Length: 283
Image 1 (cartoon, rainbow, N blue to C red):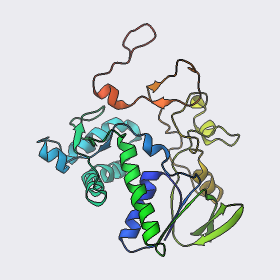
Image 2 (tube, rainbow, N blue to C red; image 1 turned 60 degrees about the vertical axis):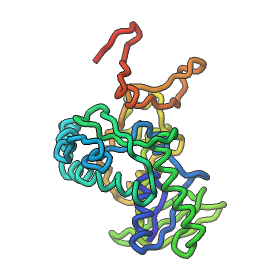
Image 3 (cartoon, rainbow, N blue to C red; image 1 turned 120 degrees about the vertical axis):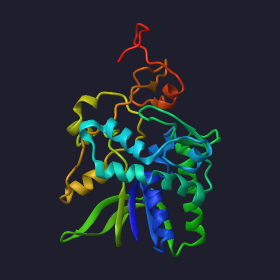
Image 4 (cartoon, one colour; image 1 turned 90 degrees about the vertical axis):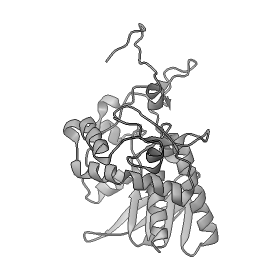
């Protein structure tokens, strides 16, 4: 099976799942180093009724996680997707623990949650970095030990999603100045488009009010996958749903920099307060 141009956690999770189910995988990354925005996740991964919660005697439930998420989503809620997210959350956390030997035994209560359910480890790395690196390292090891089943090609930019009739049948990518076509099922996990400041920017088209704001996204988040799929007839869904995070770290030497580092939700979860320029709390 084939997959292309990716968001690291979702893409690597799909790649590992295919491999563990007996399939063959080719992973393509347009950059020379895997990681993406997932490595920047600083708070953790949410799960209800996990082993960690049980050990800590946290009286959470998947129904409460579902209700919290439904409440936060308001009129944008998709109950079918929220049910998958919340009811399978413990299995996702424990898959990372069991398959990749990840430490996710610290749990905290952050914004929007009725109980502590945001999991991270004791490692000094950001949780997103620890999770992503574990999946990356295992995949790289597999590509070396089982090259007949697992291939990793970096600096390989997917140029086209190929279609025959209404069926996707492969991708064409460029590598070292040459184009190559792979045939087979495709998993597309490209991440977002909030660092797309080009003339064809999806950010400018769908959320022009955010176009002039600074971004915490890496330079790779340019919406390549969205554009390729739309070029062959796909519809965009919730394209206006771009998160504007309330806090970022400002370099006093360059306060207007277009790219900033995220000041995480964990800061407020630990008691940090949001103040305006006059030192006043606000809503």
